[in-house]
Structure formats: structure tokens, C-alpha cells
Amino acid sequence: MKFKYLLYLLISLTLVNCSKDDGPLILPINPDIGTVGELSSENKILTFSITSNNITFNGVINHTNKTITLDTNSLESSTSISPQITISPNASISPSISASQNFNNDVTYTVTAENGDIATYIVTTNNTPISSEKKILSFQFDIGGNIIDGVIDHTNLVIELDTWGDITNITPIVTVSDYATISPDTNVGYDFTAPKAFTVTAQDGSSNNYAVYVHKPKILQVDGGKYYAKAIVEVKTEYIDLTIPNSKMILDNGSNSYDLVYSNYSPYNIGYISYANFSLYLTNNIITATNYKLKYVVDNQVRAESDFFVDIIGGSVPTITSANQSLYNYGNTLILTGTNLLAGLRVYAQNGSVYQYSTSNVTVNSAGTVLTFPMNINQAMFPSYSANSTYSTPVVIYSSGRKGEGINLDFY
Image (cartoon, rainbow, N blue to C red):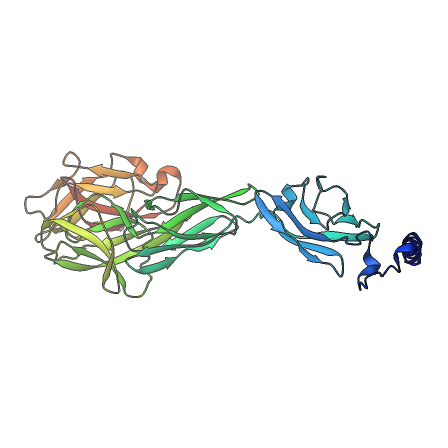
């Protein structure tokens, strides 16, 4: 600064000497006289931004601390970026504005004013990395205004829902991790009667495949379809739980309805599907009809019904009163007594086979009170054939494709 004042004094004296014949030179009083001819000392970064993955992030500049902070995301995918920078007029910056940088790390910029004064800025990014999250966070059905929440197993990537309603065209309500996408499109309806797969893809490209299982009660099948009253119907079901309070099986055709007693309830799972087998006893008071359906009822509401009809004959049905022995082996003769007996039998053997015999092997007297069956036809239906112990074996009246009452006998 002393040099500048001396320079001004010298110029002033020269002007005075050159103008002494013209009278005194009067210089104007200027409060900014000290800046005449001064070089700029401005050395600021005025704006700073970077663009990554088509998103522009603007820096917050602190001129006191000489820091520039940017809140970014997914920056790790871009390790060479040319920033957008403006600086003070007549200043220069190093490294060059056009130079690419890796802003995953702190980057230092030096701004030099016109007069040589230096300012050093440190650029820091607070980066949210590319997300690897790929979860289904919630999965719901809206069935008639009733919201059903899926139970999500993120370890095994399985979603399970329980419902009674129609699931042939359901648009699920789904949320997934931030930045993730899901396919197929969850804004359209799907048939969930079979397991449905959904893929969730994270921002980083990794993915999870979820399987959706809907637990809807179903009556799958029975052992036949034609019965006499007093018969036992063997039933296979899916997601039917008869241990639930106020649950039952009924036989109904719109005109007549009967509560049925069940036995031998045996639930089991295959994968994520729950099955149950059980027996239903057809009471003697059932009225003859060909259009009965089996129904699963909980709290007096039908939750499932068979998609097939059950044909039942009631009244004057085959009835077994007794058998001639307590234990039977190959070569013995089985004699059953009762009423309305028919010349046909099924034997449910210990080896898992069902042996069926008709009038060529079974005879009944004209009164229908005595049935005779010589047991010298098939040794394989006896446990002793494969060295097994005594086995309680169901023997059932079976005639013209119709199942009737049975009796359990010991075979050995």
C-alpha cells in the first residue's frame, strides 16, 4: 500500500510542475482514492454443482469455513464427474473446472484472485449409496372392503395370506423397498388359486423372488361320490381346520342340511400347502338325493364347498350287525349278518391296497340278512403275507359303485 501512495504522489507532483504556468492544480477529493488501479482480491467459489445419473446436486457453500457440501445419492456409480462451477470475476481455479473428479472422496479446489490472494475450498459429499434393498414390505388383499395382510417371511421369500373370498382376480396392494421395483405389475389383477411369484429388483440390480401362497379352504375330493346312508366318506381337503371353534362339515343341497360327525382328522403339510384328511359319517336320517354338496362352515358362514355333488341313498340301507369271527386269516370264511345286505365288498388292507369283490365272490341270502365271503382268493390282503402283525382292517359294503356301511375286523 505504501508503494501505491508514493506512486500517486509522484504523479501528482509531475502534474503540478507541468501546469505551473496555468495556476495551481486542484485534485478532487475521492474517498475511494486508495482503489485506483488496484487488482481484485475476490477469490470465491460462487456456485458449485455436480450431475450424476441425470440428477443434479447443488452444493451448499460456506465462505467462512471454505467448505462446499453436497447431499447426493448413488454417487458411487459415478467416479469421474466434471462439476459445474462459477467463481469470482478475474479469478482462476485449480484444478480446472473442466477436469473430472471422483467426488466419492473429498476434493480440494484452490481459487486465486486477480491480485494473487488464495482461497482453498474443500468439497464434501454426503452420499446415500445405491440401495441394495429388495424387500416386499407389505402385501395385502382387499376383498369386499376386508383388508387381508400377508405374513412375509423375508428369509425364505414367502408370503402367506388366509382368506375365504374369491381369489381368481385380485389386485394386490404392495409396497417395496425405496428405489426398488417389482414385477409383474401389481396394479393389475391375478389368479391366486395357485402360488404366484413376484420379483423385487433393487436399485443396484440385485433381486429377490417372492412366492405368494393364499390359504383358501378347499374340499378337494372324496373316495367316490355315491354312498348309502351310514357310510363313511373319506375326505381330502386343503386349508380346512376342524379344530377351529365353531367349525364343522355339513351336507347340504339347498333343501336338506345335515351336520356331519368327523373322525381321524389328520393334518399335514407339503411344502407351504396345508392339507387334512378325515372321515365323515353319513347319518341314517339323510334323505335320498343326488345333488348334495359338502360344505365347511365356521361361525355359521360357509367358507368352502365342494365343486362336485355327492349322491346318497337314504332309507332301507345296508346295515351290518355282526361278524362270525374276531380274527381272520387267509382261507377263513367271513360271514356278516345284518339287514339289506348286498353282494359286494371292499377290503382296505394293511398294505395300502383296496381289494374289491362282487357277486362272483360274495353271496347274500334272499332276505339280505347274511353275507358270505370265502377268504381264499387273495392272500396279499392279510398282514401275515408280509410277516406283519395283526391289523384292524375296514371291510365295507360296496355294490354298483356305491359305498355303504363298514365294519373293522382284525386280519393277521
